[in-house]
Length: 399
Image (cartoon, rainbow, N blue to C red; front, side, top):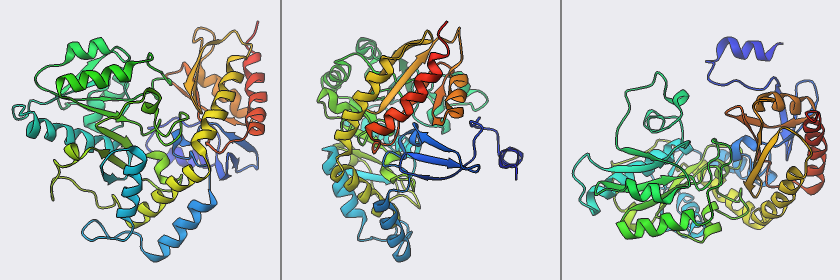
């Protein structure tokens, strides 16, 4: 069967996948329908940070699915409390609101920030503003794409909600200049993923924290991709030693098998919610809570944060040592690395296609950057296997 042709015939063309049909995966390896094996250097944008089919996650999922999966939040379960208790311990915050996808958690954060602004800062009704960064990527809902600076995300989906101010990423001075008496929050990715693994200048997050303290503004960080060990710390903001008022989490929280997300915040922020003000039929269900709790335990007990720091340093060193005339920059933290190529010579998508032929799964962004974000379980030998092929592909471009 031509699976690609079938998929194209019945699926809206909102993605442009690489020409491979995956059938099974285990750990850092995926196998296609022809039996060819690939090293997964994307891990589903961090959703598979624990590797494919982690035995502890699968065991927890199967046990819980057979016992109790979904009841809605109309009733209590014995799992939601322990899951969120562990989540707030890990984040150093106070309370959490469980959702399903990263975009839903972002929407939750926006609602919390606005309501906090009205209740605590006494901003005039419907006038609250949130400062966001150029080249941000926080999801695909109409509210979120409405404050994107990328026209391709916005085209044909307006009219959009107001209440957002765009400033350059990495420029704390620009943020301060955008602050007004209507500002309730700054919503930022500590490292911009979709933009090409863009790391801001050292001190940027500390400056934002100080700015928020001066002006009584919430600092809300979107760590859906960067969180839970991806950058070599539990959370990317910990590289600068700050504490946000709100933290948006998802992807890896679902252990690679189930959508689990959450907005975590201080008591002050989370107390703005009351029964009926927000909800989700599936958010915080028993199956999600069991998987999320097990995912947090696996990350801690298997020392995946420390592994990300160690293996990420090794991967970045190998990538920076490559000899290729197409590489313009290598940047990232931990096991989250972007390799920017010279678009005048070759597109990043063409490099991805070549890597695919050589057994390495990656994905480009904006045609100029290849992203490498393997499962945190990857070993040095597996990185070496991948780097042999990555170096081979990049060496071909040397003239």
